[in-house]
Length: 241
Length: 336
Image 1 (cartoon, rainbow over the protein chains, first blue to last red):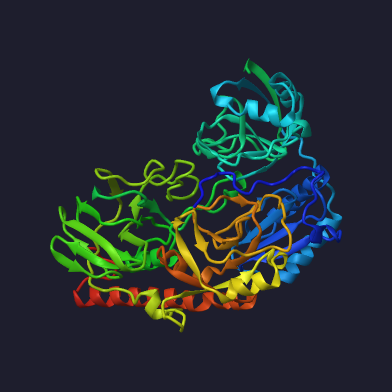
Image 2: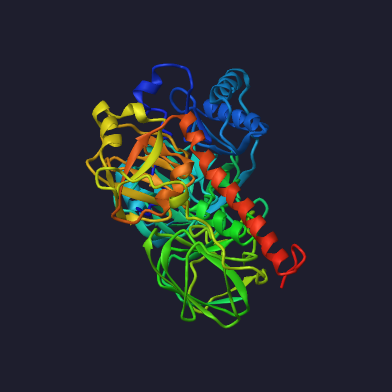
């Protein structure tokens, strides 16, 4: 098994066309994943508005007695049932109706201000990001901490938050050869997404800095530091281009 | 208490898993062959969520530091208790100080060493399963090593020497007629099935796929002629569950399993139904598998014989324990 922890990252870039077939209609796509899971996918390109509607749907689905677990994705939601539903069609109809009628859920979220030690050995891909962007490292850093990010979804690794809000000027594709032992707390860029690595291990995203933040602690309640809807701002603690 | 005397990598404490935290990025973990663990727990009159040692590498040798009743399920292997041969799927009692040695399986891949009362490790986020990536659960969040000791809360049962018909016998093998060795797995077409070319869709079902050495608790990488999409797609991150069959750009499928990431982004062609996941868990590297298309209704119905098998076993064990204790002149439920 390939160890890359963030295999199959999502594309948040609003300019990037999603699968054409799915863009054709404005109706959501609903499919069964085996007998106990159902996937709801919002139509069209990524927008925060759609993501907020997914969060609204998540809230509503949480109240269903047949739902054991929910996995919010990027403009999609997976429902895992405790037993196979009697009528998947009835659940699908319920989801479509909820999608059509529920207002967007604006999560106020908490604001995290996170100090970053940019560059250096723990942000060794800063040069590559800089080269890809065609901007000096100082500009990449300034652009990175000028944005406010939103935790869009949590997944892949315990506590890892997919951050929306990266300035497209510093978007950088994942590396073809992943770093084998990236430290937990590394500030990273993968395509149009930003993040902070949650675990030490192989990672294909580009490292540009480091923070001491621990994103997950199973003994803490809640165990994950970030929740969906939280806002993140970075500020430079030090810069080593 | 038990002491691990000999083990290689990848043997861990697992129970039925840790559902409920995928929204925080925590995969379920849990035994790969949930059926084998359930059989072991039923045989030993355990709670269904009691934990076992899941074996993936052999030999595995341990010492019982106190008398304990146990069963090894999931595999057919040479099992030896201080020179005495023990059959898998059978309940046996070891005396304090006895050494149990489990050799490489002749059939199957993953053994469950179940002990009466279960393996006692702290419950973390609702489960005793080892979460290797997160480094928690099980024994300090890591694989077992020689010298480790594990607490067992149970007492030796007063009755032993009975067992279960292995699922492969009770439920039937689903081997392919052509060579008798290809394992058939029923699967439902998934979200992105329609994105594959008709030729690839057909080939996905028609041709066998080989389980490559890059296969483990995270997932199985399969080899075969690569599958093709109509056109390349970039999908947004979506939830992943055990059984999902993804096709990365290179075209060879991956079946996600117990330690899978909670989210993924590759196109999903199909999902192996829950009723057949244990067969995949016991399929070894190099084995050929073939996917057989099944509907939602068939997938749901497929769980019925599995549940009936477990219900029958539960009834049989209760009946046997009662009658054995009755014959021995004990009150029902008395412990020796």
